[in-house]
Length: 267
Length: 80
Image 1 (tube, chains in turn brown, yellow):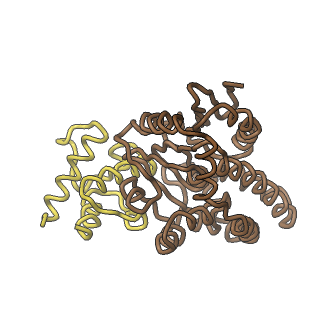
Image 2 (cartoon, rainbow over the protein chains, first blue to last red):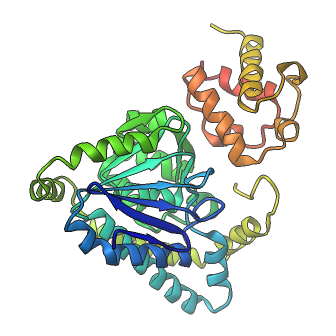
């Protein structure tokens, strides 16, 4: 189908370009609802790939591309059961997330993330599945997970290691600091920076250009350039599940989830 | 090399422009969260604006707990 509207996102195809718009208030938090919509999208990918050349992923939410995993949902998932069951449910959830993200990563379409505002945690991990990240000048990128006692679990560390020097990977993960678009460009996370409000326009320009090229050749080049770090992705799930249900993490998450103020709890 | 007062003044000007308020109403000792009624995400936008203007990177942990313009200026000044 050439267009679809889900609960948290929509997509349409025009002139050989698929545009996937994330649209779950307030900041495209990735929980079960977004996951189900993304699963529906990836189920449609084979048909889309047969007649399109590029995929743009962007956000319609003012706050940004995505603030990451839905921590309230993740906390709730871990709370309502014993540790072994919580780990099992978390592993199942992560398995589904990884299946979707890996499918996006390996799509034969040239994929472009048009990023504005916050691109944090799971949102950053979604952007990293794309071939190009075009960052709005005001975008910020961050992996804050260590601040709450766990690690990125949606494939962020293996994909970051794929793209960057290890020193910066260590800085981003171990300090949990956010970086701006200028830094993202200079270190190779983003390949282009757009003026404020122009990331989608630049993404459309890049997509229109790649739509001129032979698809089989582009897909072969992509497979060669961009291997999937399969072993590391599986290892990340294992480490995440081991860390996530620890009492210290649950306590940090409880504080974060219960903090309704303007400065959510983050050490 | 800018003085701390020059840096503070530039921050106040940028903040006024970013949040669309008159510069005249801002003091270096103001709590910018309360003054602008903003949350941490909106504060990050200001941080980005300041980083772009001064050409510095300001790690989040250096501005954690910082809520007034003068202290923000000292953090930026340390990276000029």
